[in-house]
Image (cartoon, rainbow, N blue to C red):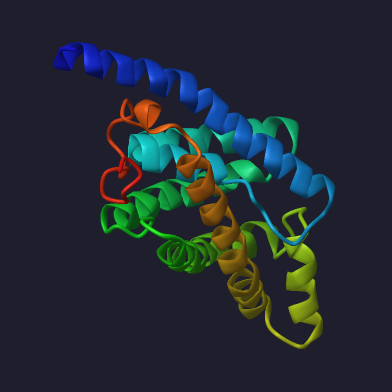
Length: 201
């Protein structure tokens, strides 16, 4: 197969996979919100797409997923599109550093993603929503407020309590999903960090 044919096949797979990855984000996020769990689990598609296709397409998945979520599920979601962009960038960065090559490194990647996500999201939660974003995490923020903490500290404490656990779960799920994809299919995905993390071996 020529290089052109290979690139065309990769682009076709990307076009087919991006809507699926968006649906994963929106669908699982909707379930978690309906159950009012103190988690998010709304970035699995972003993480998978980034590892398979690179940060740009991962960011497309994350941003479009949050726009769609904002329209049909949670109107606050659109304000966190920037967090999805950061998740795609950081996932790509750590992926290139072989941080999804085994389960232990994947867990470390999830912790890092969680800490960064908490920091990036905190100003939006504090200054736009005063700590209440309409999901289960707001209950954790309220708990810290009732313990006598200022709203900024409460949001950060809530984020540092929830986000690392949330992102570890999502990174592990993404890792397992990619591990379950046949290698002859994975070989057609370009731009991500499959090679660096031994998914093709």
